[in-house]
Length: 182
Image (cartoon, rainbow, N blue to C red; front, side, top):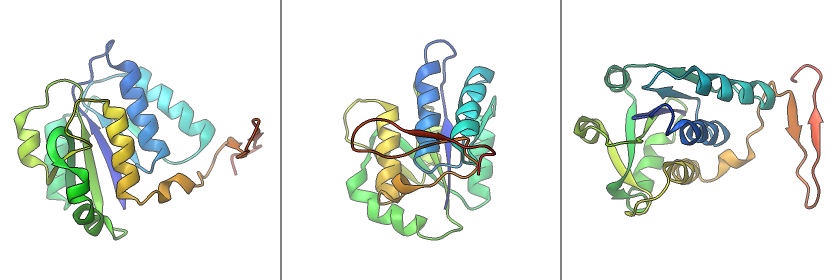
């Protein structure tokens, strides 16, 4: 399954930290990449540096025309999930989502808004999904959505080409620095 995040409405100074966290959560929890409607090389650099150190093949592309990306995704057979507090509760649609995602060729674009999302996104989405029908963090919504969709399996992912790797411990901290990212 391929999961890509489409981040809309990123305001350069106001949303820099939140959008970075959207990308980091997506990377850690199984997404393949993030498309960002605004151009922000700082976010690209920050997330790419994390990917370089901690492994994986996560990509970030900024300055995309979101409406073209959404249209192309759907034309190529991908499905679109828009995370919004106005959508159907995730618990009511998770079985349908998992059935759709239950093959290696499944492609899911997860739309995560910042400011007011244009109505065309609600219409284009195959699912408008609420992780509770209350206002809260888009980072939390994305994390819960990815976890529910993948049955928690993403939490055990081994990231290839990592320069660093954490050794899980009950107490204390240990990080292994690898010589060549293998």
